[in-house]
Image 1 (cartoon, rainbow, N blue to C red):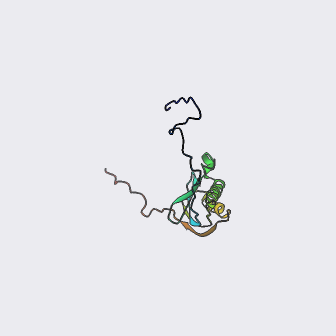
Image 2 (image 1 turned 180 degrees about the vertical axis):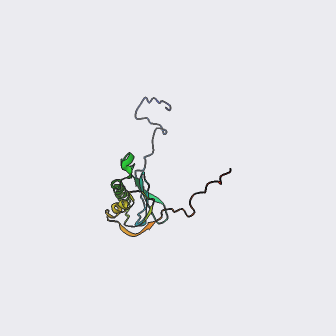
Image 3 (image 1 turned 60 degrees about the vertical axis):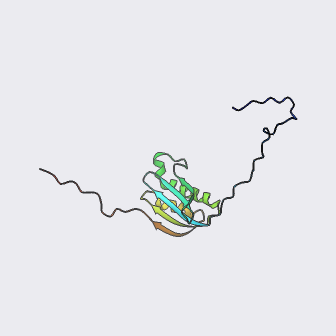
Length: 145
């Protein structure tokens, strides 16, 4: 709570009562013109992240953030809105040109790309980065009789 001070005369202020004025200067964000849009599409959700050329994410969105709950998160409509929302956040920083990298096999794959394209962003490449297993699952142990 701090010390309580009683001032008898309001014109007499001590040096400890004076507060330095706080700087109200807004922090300037750097402009980002080119970057990569990462789409992660699973059976349950769609997540879109926008990163600069160094890989630093500066805007993102998901179906849960947009207010969709349960089974509606995995719909193509939700993915379209997620793609639009993430890129609109990025456009505030001057974002204009993007490569799109898709990962996953959910229903929102193509819909998220359509949402990104509808914002007016110039898409230069579309990359499918879905991980694929090369050797399958481990075989069963041999049966001992």
